[in-house]
Length: 208
Ligand code: AMP
Image (cartoon, rainbow, N blue to C red; front, side, top):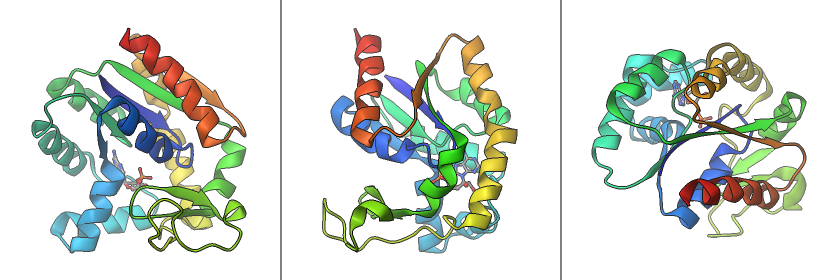
């Protein structure tokens, strides 16, 4: 299966991606993770990406498409694209170098997103929590590493990221709808496990 995970910042793409990759044995490719790894290593791509990420803007299409293309060249089986494509241009480019089976759109009420992202604490292993459920704990339940808050998970940047999503990424719902590849999972206040049940129902049905 070759899947795109679409959704606004804070919709839970990363959380679901970790579960999906384990259960369905798909390679998880996250452009956000790739940019953060580049920033940590101090590469040229990292330096460029940081200025856009800090402003809540998208990294330029050419750079983003190239790192995805290179990373897909190394993948043999199925994969899960998390956070890519994010613009119509990226979607059209992707059509030139990959054949996607399904676009899974995680649709969460926008009013929930600001609090979700600003309260988010993440771990290097991919796990993600909300401060309100941590009871003061500062380490990851799964691996014990320290939790931290992403630099771009602050109210000002989050507002810019949500606006960027509406303007540049939301049109992809129509793009994949027209291709007959879109499945939307509508979520409200469900827990990640409950959302995952819905996601599994879609993917198991698709896998038959
Ligand atoms: P994420 O971890 O998916 O929330 O991505 C964090 C940030 O990385 C985004 O706010 C963008 O600045 C940048 N980014 C991630 N994926 C893309 C993409 N497909 N196109 C452009 N910028 C991206």
